[in-house]
Length: 451
Length: 188
Image 1 (tube, chains in turn purple, cyan):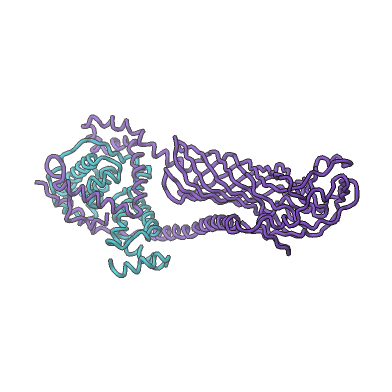
Image 2 (cartoon, rainbow over the protein chains, first blue to last red):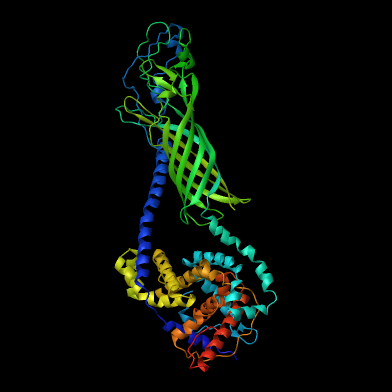
């Protein structure tokens, strides 16, 4: 009868064994722990930044949803007939007079105890343990307890690495003749090893973690322009148009007739408009959970304002004719469009480790160049809107953040989630010092190969 | 769970360097012996020990004070050793868990009357695959079902590999004991 005395003695002897590690081991452990502390800081900033962006959006869109956005305008809306176009002579003068209305802008197995009582050794010629069923059942239970802790992900890594090693066992025969001799007695060894390439796929996966990946991304949502107030005026609307702007440099005489009285009304409030992005990106893992993304996108922003009728072109210069003016009013809706080429750079963090449904948070900066715009700008001295994108700051830096959930579909990883962008630099600055910033909020979608 | 260990873990979780050093000093020697059994050199064993202790401190919050702290650390070391063997090119090529069918386990139970270090040296001279499974089953006490799950192999493969490892080790011990004058541990 088989007696597991040998195993018991081996365990006892192995428990007696101890060695003193060299000093370098502890110093290296300490270094690793210190690195961990340093790594936590930028990660905290990413979450802080994403949180700020989300809360800013909440207050901008939801927290102020009850404020009368058009109050300032509706008080003084005048009919276009008040300024008969043909009789009007409007002279745009240099005037640093601040606008009357200003925005109240809102930014957006146990140690096993050596198992002396549970030898679970093979018995008889079959090699099966006497307590096979009990051992297996308790083994499952113990295995579960092993996985309760960090061991779970280690086991997964071990499992993958084992698969890799399974295909590379030929050296065993060369360096271990005894082992090789025993293996030769088994005719199916080679067949088993022939199936090994399938196992080695996991090894390739590990390498791919550190390769550049590419994919396509797009988003759609709403854009708007937020105004930070540094001046003295208060306006009830949180949304103030970047397009409604006093143009202090334009001195073009536009038409005939007597100068109108200085307008006393506030410009039209701006309404959010449709916006979308489309482009491609490359991505690379920085650590097991963090990754770096560089993208190139086209970004379309828009917003709408209310204007009066178009100013007559009679007697105007060619340049003035090319940039028509619109009177103050609310009879027409004009869509201000902005076309940007942007280069977003971001760091992402995988919140979970699921491969089927990864949840990630991204944060970074987007360097954008204005390609063109047909936005109208408000001249308070004349009470008209004109096109003049020359006064815009064409280079913009926007802060990005996105929270995305992924799912795998036909070897493609598709990620979907909310995205926010906010312009850190001013799109334009009014003479009174008020700055207007781009904002985008929408749903982002990312497509990349999951191979 | 000793009260000392409880306080030690709490202090480590707070990041107290003295507590971390104390925990390390308390378990490093024993854990190095475990790592040593799985490797072919002391340098590799120290690498595993280092990697294992980094994991211990990183995931110490997952220790729920159920069971011995030493047992929890030991499991981490064993898993670190397994990962190390599979990632390290010196070992991974020799870790071949081919299903070679059931092999009758020898009924011989020679007195393992060697010193602990001598026995450890013999275990370390087993082929890496045999060495790993022998350590997991005979020393750590994992069942073949568990070993199969851990290594991603069949239970039968683990069983047969163990049987061969055991037979090999027993034959070496016998040879060593009968040839007392010759203290060489050269692999047969």
